[in-house]
Structure formats: structure tokens, C-alpha cells
Length: 78
Image (cartoon, rainbow, N blue to C red; front, side, top):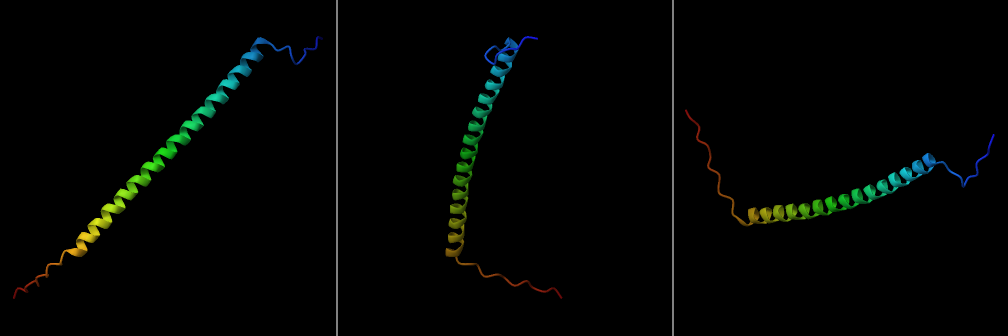
């Protein structure tokens, strides 16, 4: 039985290690991309929320400034 040193690795072992390293790097890149997209989505949501709130407050202010038209009473039919 022949013992192998840790420094002597088979080609398949080297290839597996290389593939594992590449997969790990790709996973890191994908996580970074996902986090950047999540930040962009949150910024856009905040921007849209601010626009919606501004529009709602403008509409509310305009509704408050306009006098309400007197309501006509419904006539009862006999």
C-alpha cells in the first residue's frame, strides 16, 4: 500500500477543488448582485411612496380649500 502526501493530489481531486472554488465565487457574486437589486428596489419603493403621499396631501389640501356644495334634500313621493 502506497501512502500519498497531501501535496500529491490526483487530477480529479484538483478539478473538483477548482469547480468548488468557482461555485463559491459565483455564489458570492450572485449574493452581491441580489443585495444591490434589493437596495435599488427599496429606494424605488421609497421614492414612489413619497410621490404618493405628496399627491394624497395635495388632493386633501385641495379638497379642504374647495367649499362643499350644499346637498339637495331628496323629495318624498306621495
